[in-house]
Image (cartoon, rainbow, N blue to C red; front, top):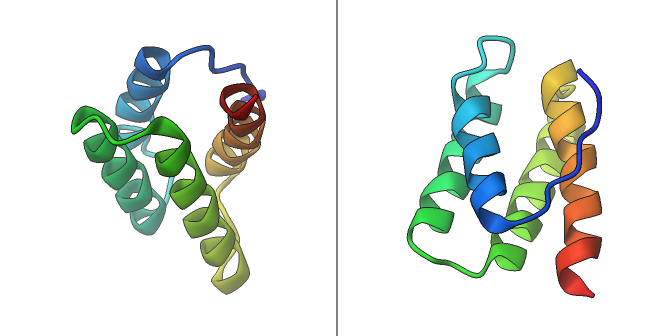
Amino acid sequence: MEKFAISNDQEFLEILYNYALNPNIKDRERKIVQLGRKELENKVYSLSVVNRMVASFQREAISSRLSKDTSVLYNSLKDYITRIAS
């Protein structure tokens, strides 16, 4: 799976739906994705959601390695932060 560009909040929400169903990610990673998805559904500011998810994935990476698919999502989120913050 290659890094991808997230262009808007609706696309981001759809990506999170799909990642939550991905059998190749760990349960703890899935929980982070599901919490982010719920926040977006509740209209929380997307930059806040992405920042929280990135921080959670960083903590997860320190305690145990991220799965390959989650690493792709993590790298895509960092690019999305730059896009929505500017």
